[in-house]
Figure 1 (tube, rainbow, N blue to C red):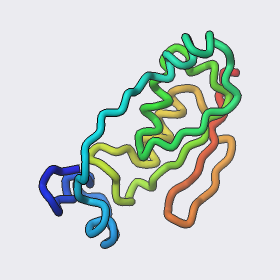
Figure 2 (figure 1 turned 90 degrees about the vertical axis):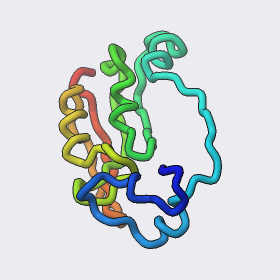
Figure 3 (figure 1 turned 60 degrees about the vertical axis):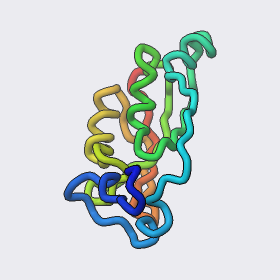
Figure 4 (figure 1 turned 30 degrees about the vertical axis):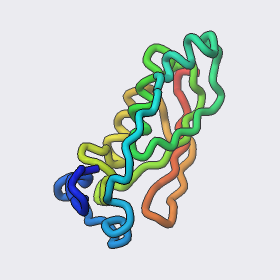
Length: 135
């Protein structure tokens, strides 16, 4: 988010749908900054899990879901199913550069996944479960 109080426009991609009023009024101000330790799924799958197969991976990374899957690197073939939410291409994005549905679908297909199940949510997002074609 922007460091300027009340400045929420920088969190939306240009041309994307406007935020709902409550987002602007309630969520667009920085209250505090935190550093959060992170690791890649390549580290988790390769080192922590010793290269074992992963039956199901549920991701909720606020629009960064595809990046999380990509962080599996050479271990992407170890994951059988991935469940994530997709934001419609014309919906307001949480941050500049956030991928829409089309980008995520293309990215998951490029990684070797196919849609195994799709449920349209009431908030305009689709919950997708992806199956790996390379089991």
